[in-house]
Image (cartoon, rainbow, N blue to C red; front, side, top):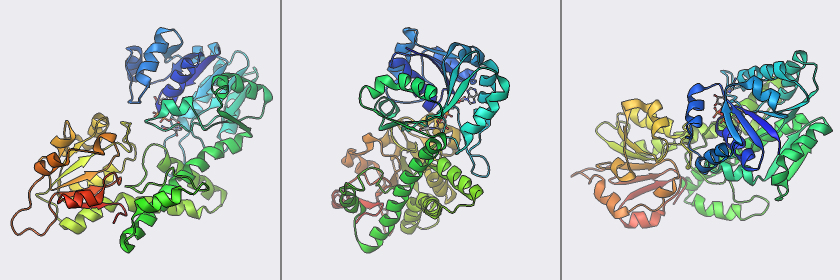
Length: 443
Ligand code: NAD
């Protein structure tokens, strides 16, 4: 058992804190957002993340998981202090390190014995050195700064944390590595890979991983456009390509473009780092521009079919969150898609099982929020599937048919049009039923 402080109780900090508690450590989660702390102390969760709703109250009631705004006491009580605060994009694309450095300064002021300060936030190469330089003048006690990037995915974060592909630890002191080994022993005992390396390589590993995944998605999205033009089906191509052991099947799905709190921001930050270093990252430049194009693909399809003026037309949108199993709307492709349709005069009714509140903060009353998928498509001219929630995979198509608007006399525009932004549906079946169907790179 170790005493661990986790500063920043967001998607990463809360999951890490709850999981470390579940693994038997005593964890104090620190945040400066009083509203968040009040929710957590009341036994509720400020975010939607499957599995946390049992894990947090269970460990809190066992006395292994506490929530506080008192960083000073947390630092004094704990041997390991994680920094898991946000690193949002600054105006020039670089990661904004204000929160990280503010926390580092406070940690420095309260060190009272050997501490391992672990940077879990995704930070540019060289940040751990800056954190060390911030703390050093504040204390005479020994300390180590360790890089331990997080690879969890929102929506399956608890499973990812408990069964990681690898734990990456960047450290320049054996003593710090030993502390990290003890901390993660419950996971390495179950077979998790523990990779020790120098600090900068660890920081770079996180960015290179996200950049590689983003590039794979953009690559397949570009290939899907070519499939569409040449009469191939990207879903068949994906199966064929993904079956190659050297490539593997993950992150090859064509869709509406990547979003979320990590890929866009981390790719931008890495590009900024490269620019500052005078190094060209051409593949990443292209990854970003392909993704920007991809986000407008569904709207382009709609306008090809319905024309540029969408006034008087109603569109049902299924899914708002940037992916399924989360309420996170950061950089969600649904935003440019809906904004594009609204700008063309369309009326939008949307349904998302988790992101109603977070999306409400973005769209306000400019769109209607439905209580279920079917309500969202009442009288709709078209349905746009934007997020791959499981409940959209096999809807009651007869009901969908009955709810959507009939073609008006003499109309040439498609009726009962389905735009499958995640390639969830089987085109042939739907076309046979009389729907008009367009997916991403389907034939
Ligand atoms: P988040 O915005 O959900 O949470 C950050 C938390 O830090 C907030 O609760 C905020 O109130 C708190 N905070 C900010 N400044 C603080 C301060 N001075 N003192 C105490 N608390 C403070 O962010 P997140 O999604 O958890 O991401 C955190 C970091 O982890 C980022 O660097 C991100 O890039 C990285 N990351 C995120 C994910 C993900 O899926 N979300 C995955 C891997 C890595």
